[in-house]
Length: 176
Image (tube, rainbow, N blue to C red; front, side, top):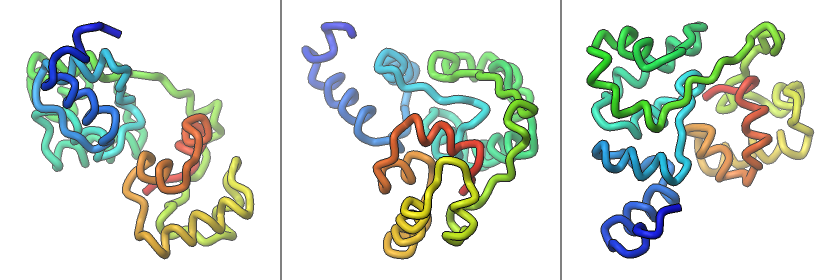
């Protein structure tokens, strides 16, 4: 990590925001560069609406469109694919390349698992998901009933204190 971050109070405040607020909306190319240096990445093929909204210049409508396209099987391999999906010029999205990952997922290798809506699933439905045992299923439902619907994978992870590795596995089986 660069040594200059702790010296500049403005950058230190931004660094703290980026690390502590998963919904902080980046404001500029400079903030994207700092987020990238901190290791913040967004997987274009698994991004949620909240993930897309972190990026400057994207509207809620555009974010929802990208998520829906991913849900129906559209794969994004580069920034030009996102630009085409949004019908905007690719150079406008060029600054986003620093923070976006274009990972390839082999749907055949996953056996095309059915995704279950975590906000409506019963305990019985949840235990059918790999990596979710009965106690975790009960905790998911109890937390949802007491604290409201889960908004994203980040919200889900934080509320139930689930490891990043487990969340990575569950992304194939649950949706919001």
